[in-house]
Each structure stands twice: as structure tokens, then as C-alpha cells.
Image (tube, rainbow, N blue to C red; front, side, top):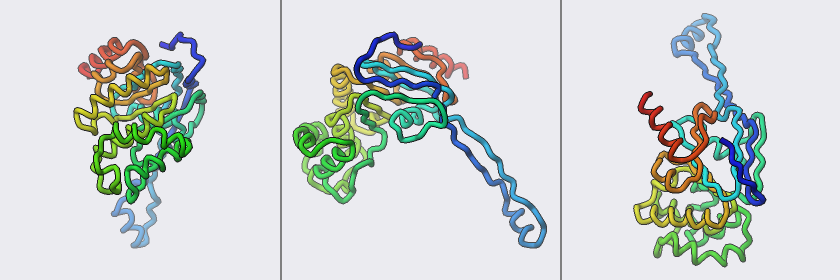
Length: 256
């Protein structure tokens, strides 16, 4: 189901997007190598295969929409998210993005392990296109949301995985783009952080940005999203109301 909302702000238009991964698997065995060393001719056996990570997929996402991508592991959800972000180049088709994007799916990006959390706020902000002045204006809000205490002035090599998530999420949502791409970050924080993160996401969407979310938490999807897109084999199976799509998806999983 395509959206009928007319958008003059942030927008994502995906037209027959195709992303193929060529796989080459050398099935030469130790036995074949031994025979070769003894003078027997045994040519290598190689399988060539192409995996359609995103397969002729078309989708339009307009201003104010919160779109969740669901499907089993390997369905192409995270690949599509990174393709929208420009991390992976398309094999064919096109993706047109209007608006500043901010992706939260690689928490190590822009972080220096030997630098402090405070220093990394500046480094990461610069890496995603903000000026030092813009970063300094938001620094205290970022620090307050991350709630790392004295660790904010300690090297990030001393941080736990959850602390990385908290600081990464705070930077990504306070140095915010108009389009926010999120892949499975809510599960890494504690319950208090998750609650604050979800409230923060609602605040961002109310400011008329776009959210594209990948998570296996269907309850979270239903509470946050205005649309769900069910993917399988790199293709769209169903696009529509979150409750309806989730129910059809769950019935399919139970039947399988």
C-alpha cells in the first residue's frame, strides 16, 4: 500500500531498488589439494551465486510517517535501511532522499576509543555535518540525556555496550536529521533508558521528521509506527496498518 500523503518536506522515494551480492564459494577439499600435490589434476570446484538482498522494491515514505520494517532474519530489512542511508550502492533502480539523514545502526561510527565521551560528541557531530557552534549549543542536552555521570569525561574504551548505545542515541537524536534511520538499538539499554528513548522518538516524530525503524519487537513497532512493511527475500510482502500487517505476519510465522 503506497501512502497518499502529499509531502513538501522530508521524503524517501524508492523505485525498483535492486541490491545483489555475488557470492563465490570454493568447494575444493583438503583431499583435492593433496591429490594435486601428488600430481593428479583436480581443478577447483567453484559455485557462483547471486543473493538478491533487495529485490525490485518500490516504496514511498512521506513527512511525518513512522515506518517499521519487519521480517525474519535475512529478509533484507537492515540492508534496505543501509541502502537508504547510502552505505550500500544499488545494483539497479534508484533511491531519492529529500532531507538530512541520520542513521543509528553503527554505534562505533565517529567514536574514538581513547577520547572522552564529551570529546566524541564533537567528533561525531562534525562527522555528520554539524558545525562546532551547533554541537556546543546541544552538548549539555546530549550529556543530560545520555546520563553517563562522570564517565562523560573518561575515555570511551571504559564504556560498556549499553553506555555506547546511550551516548550514540543521544548524539543521533539531539544532533538530529529530518530523517532518522534506526536498527535494533532499543534492546541494548536498560529499562529506564528504553522508556526515555521511546519518549524521545515520539518527540522527534512530532517535529515532522521521518522514522524508518528495524526491530524484532512488534509491540514497539505497533506503538511507534504508522505503517509496517513486511519484507521477505528482499521483497515487500505487505505494506499497511501496523496492527493488520503484524497480525498477518504472526499468522504466517505460526503456520510456518
